[in-house]
Image 1 (cartoon, protein in one colour):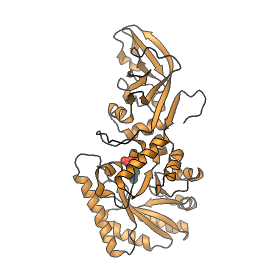
Image 2 (cartoon, helix red, strand yellow):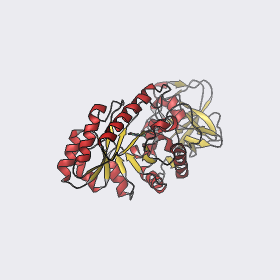
Image 3 (cartoon, protein in one colour):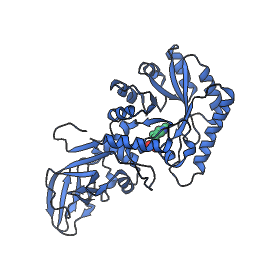
Image 4 (cartoon, helix red, strand yellow):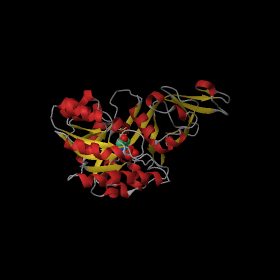
Length: 364
Ligand SMILES: *Cc1c(COP(=O)(O)O)cnc(C)c1O
């Protein structure tokens, strides 16, 4: 992706694999509408290129977190409806309309902002319920009357109602089923009150894989599109989309007893070949992978030794002796039949593939 000459880190995004993963989502959900989540620069994959492919493949909407992300997609020529999922500041109401963005609202404050600032220029919104996430959204008690009131407001078209799962990735399904029941109850109440029910959506990647009863009218996959699932059991058919490589800056042979990197947390036990690689935590390689990470050098998996620095990381390449200065090592990706993907790095760094992708994809 990077076109800067001499850049020592490259990120490649395989858009065919992205399209393939969308096909896999469709294999689960059939002809339900798909709201493809491209927030955080498409989880580090490049929001514009990803959105172009997904739009061409016929997704119903794109989901972003913040208004600027939506504006950037419009300026890049994306025509697909865009859902702005973190709500609306009153100062942003007019920009939402101007760029044909669809905010998710969940408060009187936001409804008031739309009424006051739009002076009846029409806008489409979705309304969010908190069914147990404990984040944005109306409580199930407030929901039906708020939705009715918004439907009745001049110039405001309520196109969707949504909620978000907090535990759909966990083995225990009790809480997830409870969230779904709460959402369905609100939908039922609305069915009695209103002639037209806006479309309902709730399922993230975990629910798409594990809860067909949560598909409703539309689904909101993020992580799956990029080739991963949020639990340790892998799911067949998905293909990781992004690979990251970094250049070897220097190689040296050190005698036994040589401390490597800050704090001297790794000391060579014998004569060891060390490669210094041009990526560190500024490039999105987590410092938590100090003495824990693995990269691929000359086709072999080799360990990270010592602390990960801001712009450099050291590898023990004793087993990968053909590696030379200026070669690329695979930070995340595959070479031949060896691979290191975001789920493995996430386990080693005690985090999730989401965070690995966002950091590695959006790093320097
Ligand atoms: C990020 C996000 C999603 C996508 O979640 P994945 O687990 O990546 O599939 C769906 N809905 C909302 C509201 C989100 O914030």
